[in-house]
Image (tube, rainbow, N blue to C red):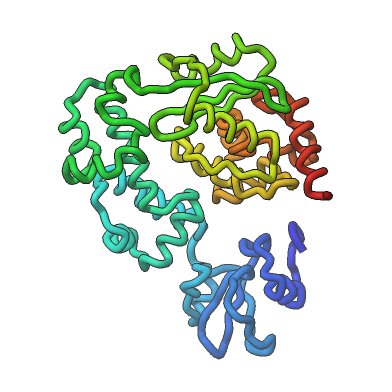
Amino acid sequence: MKNLILNTDEERWLAVLARDSSADNQFVFAVQTTGIFCRPSCRARHALRKNVRFFPDARHAEQAGFRPCKRCAPDKADPQAAKMAKIEQACRLLEEDSALTLTALAEAVAMSPFHFHRLFKCHTGMTPKSWQQAARARRLRAALTQGDTITDSVLAAGFPDSSSYYRKADDVLGMTAKQYRNGGSDVTVRYAISDCELGRCLVAESERGICAILLGDNDDALAEEIHTLFPHAQQETPEGTFAGRLHQVITSLDNSGTALALPLDIRGTAFQQQVWQALRAIPCGETASYQQVASAIGKPNAVRAVASACAANKLAIVIPCHRVVRNDGALSGYRWGTARKAQLLQREAKNQEE
């Protein structure tokens, strides 16, 4: 039915039954028993054929005395654009006033809180609260980078007071405001390098948990990579509890059925965090395309950004970016080499069969 010119009422009726969106700009249909006219793609319950009339556009239907459907808005040029305009307006309001509640925000864009919350998450991949927190974090990082005092930065970012910021400090910066302003120079990160089934493996931890798991063949290259991520990271001989945690990580990497029970220090943008969370939802032994991951986070057009987030992953295997492939099933790239990616997928598939 798509892309066809619908010349007869029977063809138009078939388009209505199919809720064919490609027919939306060709005609509208009106229901005599309700006095309402709709787009062909309207999701409302179908009326009886004998009660349906067809008109070339909304103006003709209104002239005949019918009212536009509030659900599909057939009198609007592009209802999808109108919805996007409301979301964009809400985002601007959140940038301007980070203290807005969901109710106040929904009222500002003339929608019910429930419908607004669902629409916002569908189009942005985030809840309004998550967007609000991400906006605060951006403002806080900008203010600290410019050299503002910590108190001024916290208040300028939209936190009502310093105590409310400190309750959220880990989520906002991954470190204290003082450490961030100093470039993270006093954030303690230590690492060790060991063997695993995939070659050499560097495991790094901060005060908050495992912050990097890197794979390679050359210790010097691994050390160089960790220092690009954490310039002040220090290599240590694994002893005591640190040695025990290193052993847990290696055991988890070598055995896909063994989950890592250690705390993780996952640092990234709000979008990267979304992608990494979606990756961890891909079952062992299965794969997903970059397009599927983009759709899973509510941003189907962000395929390239998803690929970039996969490439930025610092926790090999634990955040399984190796399970993301191209639409045609090809392996595509992998931060630690496509040969390792193939080995990982083969190992997981074999384990699932067993």
